[in-house]
Image 1 (cartoon, rainbow, N blue to C red):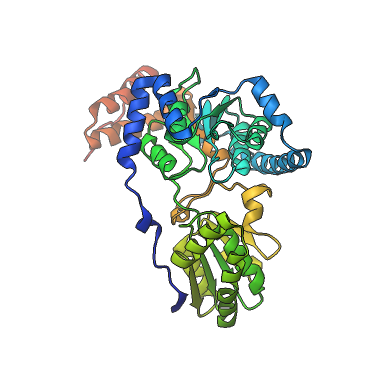
Image 2 (tube, rainbow, N blue to C red):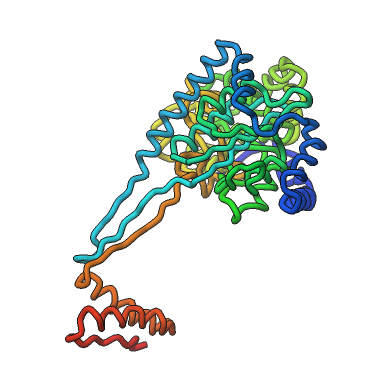
Length: 435
């Protein structure tokens, strides 16, 4: 199957990989050693904010009062959708048990982690939706303490809409601290907080690197790179809609790849014609990001047929995958590698980013080939248990003893031997490995 690149990226996410590891490692080590005082020092340096770190109930109430009623209604709408979808997802994780052999029962139990740390970006954009996505799923999962952390603006603090969203979604603590220092504060349990068991939420390259370094000490949702989006479109697609959707995702950042995969050259040509004008029509700050992303990272790929298009998409394993093509059921069945799938013109990535219910914290940089996005499942520990009658343990003990001896693990074998001898003193067992 051939692929013709009508537009080829000149850069990749690896091209822009900054050497941030040493900087982040130093900050984390400093804060772990210096505690609250060192975290406050970095907050003053990077956040340029010296107000309360842990927002009081009065401060939260005052911030919520600043949010317009229409925006509050929109936030509640999005929260309700995300909550309902998360509740449905949680129903797929059940406590179960089964009788392995007569008298020997094994089971599974789902236990939410105790404390979740939710990072909510607040720099160039106020990521209200990230507060909804992260805090809501942690709440539905059943985490006992949920920390929301967001960068404050100098002299202002955390954006009121972020505070309102985190509050109504169930955050127990809202922290005005950003960057590596905010991640460190949640991980190390500073300012009287519990230590986070898991860190979730998007962030810049420094936040992502902090999560990478801390993974193992705490769980994380994923290690995220620049957001990316791919659109599959055939001759039935509306070129203007396709171009608009590509631009809408390119505005995320100067290094956010957007890709168009099609089997229709005329559509591809029309989309490439339309995109520059749509970018020019954006506000200046958005325009700069979208222009650079389209110029350096975007690709337009012409394939032979829909099977080739699907194979191309699976190879890219995009974070967001939109299909604007005929026979949507075929695509739903065929496609296998994506963070979230948007079927048909009637939905769009922007819906999922903000309000439709599915989560927008998703795998990037090809990680969708092996993992999905943030959900209630990320906060759940799937643990196992077993129980047995004495008779039920007999066959398992015999097999355990023989396998252990074949492996050379005599201590394991004897833990089985002692039970057979105690429970069945009148019986004789062949417990040698015969290896």
